[in-house]
Image (cartoon, rainbow, N blue to C red; front, side, top):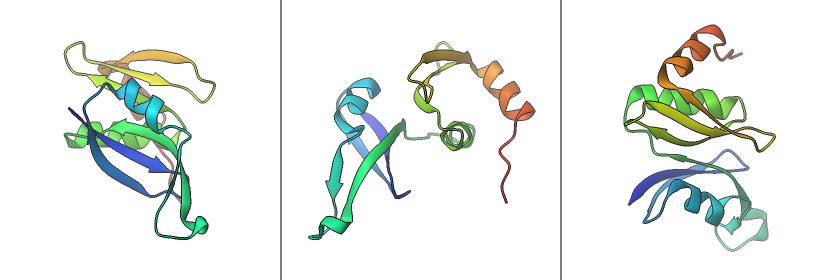
Length: 111
């Protein structure tokens, strides 16, 4: 069972649990539309899913990559690496050390 955050195209998100891998959850959710309420105006498309952050560092990592349009597929604590998918649908991996260097070198700029 995994905890995931589902992000919709209007910026809303929800936390849910599924008995599957994160990749299987992505295949189920990504690009699906869900209606909230009774109006078609309340139909939103899923644009991203991420593992639910278990600690502050992971939460910051997920926010950083999400703000840069990168979908985190999983944070592998055993191997200390992050697996992700870019906007160009390319899959790649960074070590936790590389993640920290990247975040320190290219911080998120807020207005």
